[in-house]
Amino acid sequence: MVKLRLRDNEKIQDAVKRFRKLVEHAGIKKEMRRREYYEKPSEISRRNRRRA
Image (cartoon, rainbow, N blue to C red; front, side):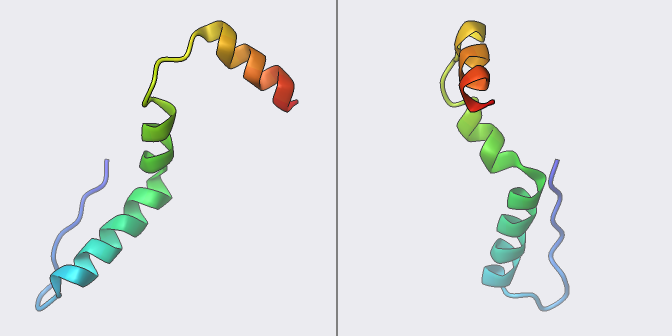
């Protein structure tokens, strides 16, 4: 879970930039893309075999 507290006299744009970096670093964006559509377990294993 990403938590962000505004610093004293921090601009909103700077806080948004920090938030984006935190989300990217935590892997939330990647996880959201992965869970966007349901993927059958057989499709997951097939994809993993192709990648290996």
